[in-house]
Image (tube, rainbow, N blue to C red; front, top):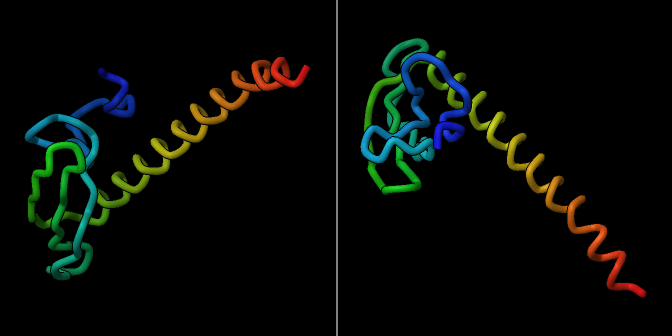
Length: 95
């Protein structure tokens, strides 16, 4: 499903697993501060379990966080849509 890539253009961000190509990669540990704005991180794919360690810049982490915020907003909107769609059924059961 292409919508899993959060409508990105260009190369995939840190959130996309290089193994399974799904957007479920999350940081699990900050291992070291390499330099100003460079971090050694452990990243894990919550889909396939792939664990990767690498050095990443502030900009990459900011993009990852922005992606989380977009995904959270999409999930919240979907939950709201489901709740609104269920209301007529709940109203019909009361009578």
